[in-house]
Image (tube, rainbow, N blue to C red; front, side, top):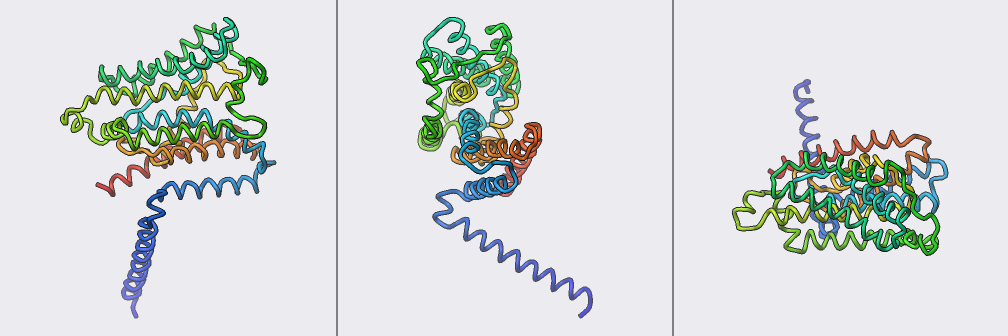
Length: 347
């Protein structure tokens, strides 16, 4: 057998193995259970478990309840940010202001509590109101004034930082640290060692999933991301539904502020930018397309857990948070590239 015949035989063997692998993978993907759970979500869950096992063996004092509870503290506020921005990205838009808006809501409401003695419950409602107002502002400019989402969110990010600094006179705000009469809101995170916050977050995730997948609002929001002009020509009020996505996003940022202060108590003006990228990374990693039209709340939840576990794992390995920023940036690039490749195949 000459070299040409050998090369031809090897190529044929490789092709047979490739087709065999493709058939097996296709059978797995089309399995009823796998289809119901979602192939991508199953892969993400496997990645999450492998990451935890890896950090348990390589990280210092990583295994155990304290690390898990610490990671969950990160999950709560980042999770609400990710749930909100999933709706916006589903329309084909983007919101880079969610992190600073969360900090603005926490600072404004915290200032009302510490400097003006307002009731805690009222201050928590003010936090949600501040986030919702920013959502209305962003949504109105994007949907009714046709300002590009990128420009609106960048401007809103600076406005949020400015409002928080002016309102608090550039001073940090410390919420009550105990669980007494004023610090009862901290029980939203945990009671004893029971993670109450995890239950609340998952309930909100289920509600968001129902809205996105089972209601007219969700169908229109995703349709805007697929083909906004076609939806408009069919007689749908696209402005109303596009604005709704930003309002939901802003409201979630206000709720995220509550869980942030419940976990960390102290808030400083001028921060929050990094949480934008992490929230977006969580939802994009979970299967939400940056081009719009495709979103997964379940995938977003798993993506958030991966980001939070990554943050705790890097600290357990003795590295600084800067390394997490590098890895998160690479994750965003990889997730977006995978989405581009998947769209090309579908087309």
